[in-house]
Image (tube, rainbow, N blue to C red):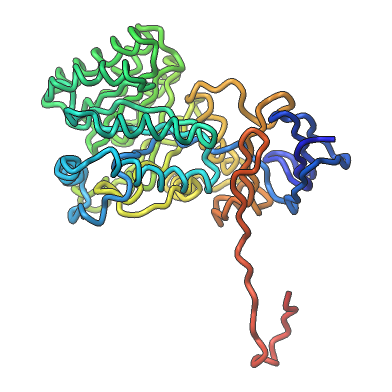
Length: 421
């Protein structure tokens, strides 16, 4: 007898229905045969997936858009508005908004998230709040914290001290924003400092790289080179990398090869990138995202993330990663059925790899973390981005959602030959 059984579900790359048995919080059976459990749920033929991994979000900025509306939609105005809003931060304020954000992520199937918190505040208010939230939500969602210097490192030397203090307090990753430093030399210096701290404390490096519509912004190659030199393969992530889309084909090919050699993870944030980038372009306007398809086809570990939720940087979004995948599929011209599977892996397996997880995936012996959707295949997920009907954490159902029920009322239309369900 299993502790929990989920019947009639389909794995992503397998058309046959299976039943999943869980015991002591781990997958104990994945079989076509009928099995019994103390608690049983019916997946109704839906897809079962490992939980989503959100590799780039901002807990401290969530739900601040109403008080800080970005009229130009540009990154620079977003930064200016956030600089004003963060003066009002309190631990209670961040915890309240962060709780709402985490609840949204969980109900959409995210059980692992990496969130950036701004350390430019002298009191590290956002960091202290994030550390409390990480502990509060530990049994529901695993959270990694990026110590994020929104005001830069070289242009804000106080952040050099705060960055190290943030790691000592419990942050999981260091960061830099080289394209916002005053000069290229300062940008490289910020990266070198970042890698020094990552090596010193054995933490991840998660860089916000080349988030500009400018082919002259060339920090991605520096990040890859530092990763190779410091022997930090699979411990470094670069988000955005938008400038890569503006490089010549020859130079882009060289950089992609270097990124692959370094075993970097690239995180694209299609929702915020397409909304914010291209603001200064004349027609034709840039698409606003990095070369997702080309990176992935070259063997680079690529992830897709939601990024901001209703902040001065992006006024929309509700934490549904499938919305970000939907946008990414269009912008990257990835519309084939095999590419749909590839895209879903960018929010599951690929994220788990960058997150550093070993016990991940629907496999006997692994922790029973999984989600169920009312969909038949990957293209259904992307086309409809439906609600997640079941969210299991360590074999325990933590969220259940009933899909919307649609009832037709066509009694006036007698000439329509429609079989009403």
